[in-house]
Length: 126
Image 1 (cartoon, rainbow, N blue to C red):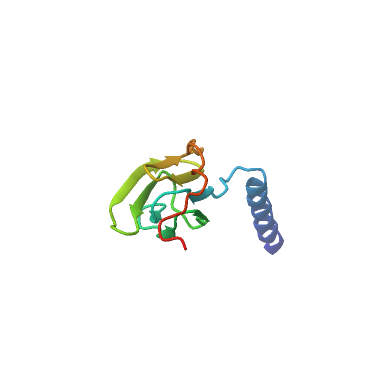
Image 2 (image 1 turned 135 degrees about the vertical axis):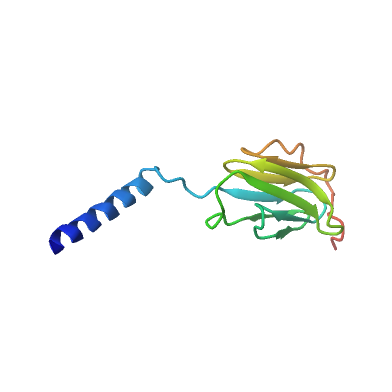
């Protein structure tokens, strides 16, 4: 009897491992923030999620392993004023692009437009 219980537990574990390996369970989504030439922002990837600060000319990757099920309500706020710059409900992989005049949220990532002009420096840069 004990052998059958142990065999059943092993079989269940092998099946679960196979489901993960074969893609039956969804992998964590990718969540990337790129602030190309915009203001410093705070990105909240889902309701009550971790707030991540991203400065002009930098980027961040947000860990989604402990995220709730999608859709996520992504909120981008100005670090200086707290004003909401963009809020959007998304599914799948997410990229947030912050520019001088707009914030883009996409899955997959939208075109962020041209690179900053030569000689551009983020506000507050030395």
